[in-house]
Length: 493
Image (tube, rainbow, N blue to C red):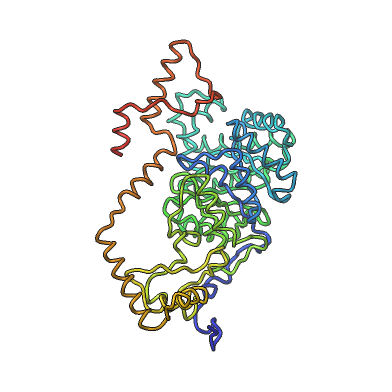
């Protein structure tokens, strides 16, 4: 219906409370998608090169600006995927302005291997950005890469635990900067850089590391919340300082979702001036995933009034379905924005309000994200929803052809029937079969520990007999039959 008063006079819009922040101009925001690398690291997920190419085309079409393609030298399939995606970009099937990114650790060996891999598949080193990363927090510096730093500095491994954190900090700066400088000497023009576990790192050291990286030839700094423990207050502590230190630079935030805060932390970082948010389609990624693409772009648009100029919001649900199909991981039916059920209504109170005007109970227009309002009927159904559906022209015409008049008596009788039918189903239905099927298939996405041990046993016996298993054999992907013991253990889980 048409309101007599402007909607802004009837409600306080979210933007009333979100103006005056330091968001970058919409045209400076670059959506950085990591579905093809970090997203694939979700346990059990493995995309084929062809699937990665289809996803890259979809991500390009929807409006992503940067795509992280991971470590091309690490796997044949990743090299093939990179080759397909670069060729697709040359042919115009992927936008010309999409930036492709590959990753390297902070050492010459990784950089050389990446350059050699790119040459082998006919990819110019300046058709991609090199992301040269290291560690950022003292925990990671001393206890994750400490022995590597000791060897580089010519120190004895026996000194590992006794040397102070400051030694590892300075050794880390030297290692990263030498790697960046080396890549630039080899002709690499674009180098992203950063230190893992940034959200738990000392802020002054973070600034020192970033400043040194730029001085060594790095072109874009990336700040990660690797373990997903950031809070909005933590974002407020780190981000303003980083933005002040590097004015005018493109700055990346890469946040994980272990507490369900990746979206709001990403938005908060952008409100301080960060212009390159990292996301993944469907929120795919390690553990609980990364900042979900759909949440970030729609929060910016609907709650903060920032519309990305070339983003196709209406493709979000189509992208969701593609990622679900390729990954084997469905999103919740009630996942915000893209879930199958988020624009579906049953409650009589809600449907009555929606029938007056959708804005009474929805602030996201479903058509904006490629969806539509749907009704389901059951325990909470009200007369209004039944009436609205039966009176739709296409349905009413069919009923009239059957000699059925849509009147109050029919509407009330149908409403009572569906309420009663759903209640009876509640008493009789068990959903354990559906849930068991879901988790059974989920557990089959990867190879379990027990199956790995069985596989090692089989391959070990083959090796003892002088037979070398070939990964390119037709049956290489088929595992030996499970023993009864492991099958019982798996089923018990």
